[in-house]
Amino acid sequence: METREDSLAAVQTVSSAVHGSTVTQRRSPVSFKVYKRRWLVLLVLCLLNCSNATIWLSFAPVAAQSAQYLRVSLEDINWLSVVFMVVAIPLSFGTTWLLDTFGLRITLVLGAWLNMLGALLRFLGTSKLHGSDLLFLVVMLGQTLSALAQPLIIFTPTKLAALWFPEHQRASANMLASMSNPVGILIANLISPAIAKTPTQIPTLMQAYAVPSFIVCFLASLGVLSSRPPTPPSASAETSGSEPFMQGIKLLLRNKAYLVLLLCFGSGMAVFTCFTTLLEQILCVQGYTAEFTGFCGALFIGVGVVGAVPFGLYVDKTKKFIEVAKINLSLTALACVAFSVVCLMPQQKAAVAVVCSLFGCFGFSIYPVLMELSVECSYPVGEATSAGLAFVSGQVQSFVYILVLQALTTRLTDSPLSTCGDDVFSWKVPMMVMAGLSCFFTCVFVTFFNTRYRRLEVEERAACRPAGPNEPVAASSSSLNEKTLQDVRTHK
Image 1 (tube, rainbow, N blue to C red):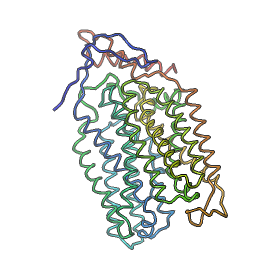
Image 2: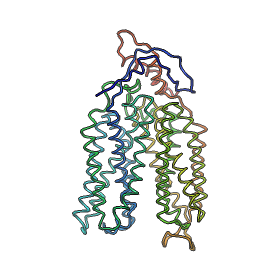
Image 3: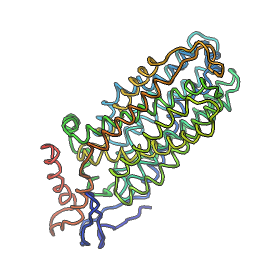
Image 4: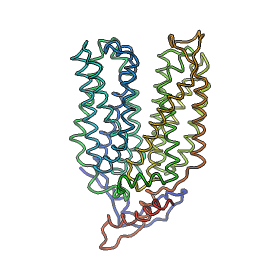
């Protein structure tokens, strides 16, 4: 049963998107609808994002058992995770075009089927081909199919929030959809070691990940029946993705505010990727065990997901995207500096755990806010295009950062506390470099980033501008986008 919220048809106070000013109360004849089924669409995306993340890192927590069962080296097992990054970079542009051109439903359903087929192939390979030379190749093929689904899923939150949710719920919807990915990473780190205690239990582990992918695929195929609701929830939703894909790319590359965001957001993603990828190698040098490292990783993700909730609700209510982004990025940089110090100190479990928690809290919570901010500063360019380019920037910088930090390590000949095995490296210089990069790009963002909230401005004008007696609602609100389109094209 559909419900209608006539919030824009009644007398209301509209919060201005620029400098926190307010607009006097006015009556608007323009009304929009929100539908209960928006929560079903959001649930499908959250479950799909979570399922894809668990498949991504399902082998990493049980690398030794996986290598023994699949009869390959640990380096080959690492490629089962790295393939997601390798596939995502070249496919990102095609995914943004697909999402903005063919719509949300086709993208979600295609992502769900690729994710499910990848999980199915992994299960069939491990259960039917044990001992065969083709086993690893089949598992890698299944992993690659799921990797193809990742861009289709991870670019979707901003688009879904824009098409289905009113302006006072967009940031919260984006936060829930975005944070389901790290929740999946956390689940994989808990489930994989619990199930696959021995190599022979790898098929059982693959089955545990395949079943949820089937359920999500079923929900996506039969539950998401349209890309957008019959009546838009806001003025901006009517023209979502109105710019052609290539024209949108050109506009983004000429948008100075977006380019600053692109560079700094990508650097932030790279720092977090390095942290999650290299955490065990960094801490083991000072005698910290794998169990403690896993605990710190869980704190990093868990506290970050919980911390994202109040920040998402706050920016939904206040629209202070820039203020929250700058404050949180500054606190994240300080947490990165603190980690670069305490990670080099032995017997400091409490300090390391606290710093990891703070790092995750401020860093993860800012991700959905920055995604919304990328849309606000680049509107009316399609949400998938603006968010997709930001994700590509993060993937490219992550690859570069990992290579650079690993190259800066030095082998230690004597490390009595080490739990790393035979290969022990000093991470002092790489950690200082990572902290320096985090501080530098935070300063760039705080100093140079400033923008109008273009999407909110369009919605404010639509709420305050009376429509003529014979003028359709769509025409009234769409005409208000002309000024925003002209401003973007002339770099204002």
